[in-house]
Length: 264
Image (cartoon, rainbow, N blue to C red; front, side):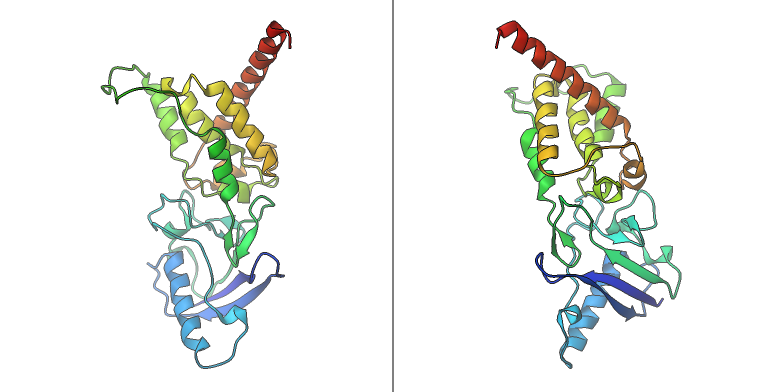
């Protein structure tokens, strides 16, 4: 297969970026999108050794790690959609058979104020780490690991928690949202612990701290566009956002009552 690629190139966060056009052929329909980019980079390295070029002739920088759809590293905006035209997959799971021979493919980085560009298609997603650091953990001392069935958990709650926990933190929800909202990510991280008894003791503090960190990082708010759920590679439901909002309201009301009762 043969493709024309229009790829966003940006030397660093301070430089002005632009699209660069490349042609590539002999691409197998069974290649993943990242394997196709690997072939492009090999071509750029080979061609770069024989003629002078600007930085757009250097290999394209993009994030990747496990290439198994579980690490959340491969964040590319392909033909106007996070992770490309397939549904329920990450970029590394997207295969070139989803495109037509001769297609022009436009590749961009995630676009969000909270995700500044580092170079080319790589963005700084450390804002997601800051949200997790604010409260995405359980610190209550629970002792040694208990027997699996010693803490009864209703099956429907366990399944909801596991569905929320499948979030890989890739940031596709932010890239898809017209407001650059991260509420699907935060909602999933809040919900997957809030549904389980181990997460109950810190539930109120957790949701308040994570939402505060979300706002401080510069993300927008949810306006129910549902693009986040549609483009999420793990099909995380927006019902987790509703759960987060309810927990946040409950935590805020309880905090007010505590302040009033203490007289401060």
